Length: 308
Image 1 (cartoon, rainbow, N blue to C red):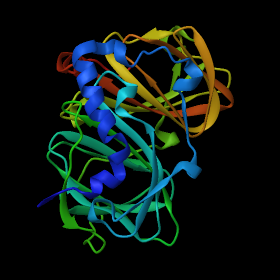
Image 2: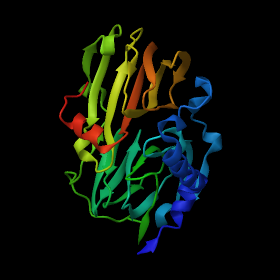
Image 3: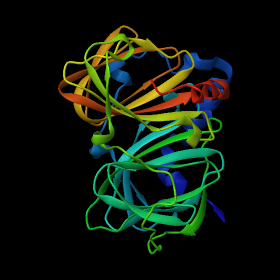
């Protein structure tokens, strides 16, 4: 096995930031991400004109076009990155391993071949597949058009690493039934919650990935729709950070007394101890939320509780 030089192509823009963030977190603690930036400046906006092209990502085939929406320093927990882009036609992210990093590849449309530990199945988007630390994974788009791609990463520490396996994984045998965990972002699976966190109106909600799936302090992946005019009550998680990515629609977020609009393709990080509320616009606000605990004890406590 060779160390993943192609990881530099995918993550090179954030490598130096990861090291700096790790040292800052060690000395400064959770206050790092709650910086003095106004809320509007903390919201990342999808911009395909900023995509860079990674050729042979993790020694895969073809090209991946992507940008770093949120870097490691966006949160004080062991969050590492939120990537957004597209996996181009007949292109793959080659099979590779992380020993201290956990990732979750999503495709938001179309279909693609997902691989975990050498077992491959075709899944239709929107869907995500988590890869636990110590496992191998790959992703292949055999079609003639790009698929929209999202990638979230958390470390066992504030460090990202990868080892390539020299396998583009473009000719894998396919299992009809996936032999790995996956999460469909299917609206039909959402269930209504009234007055969430003391708010108003109806939120459609599902915990797509529970905490036991991950080895790191990554604690959950939630899928939700804040329906038209609905609002979640202001809530504060004293030991949990969250990242919200807007899948569709529009609305707004109130964070620490400021309010800013959100639309499809936006992402915002909410650090430990920050107070937030979400409001749905005319067509609702559909989100995927990633929770990363401050420490293992917080995650363990969460595993004994039902989803909110």
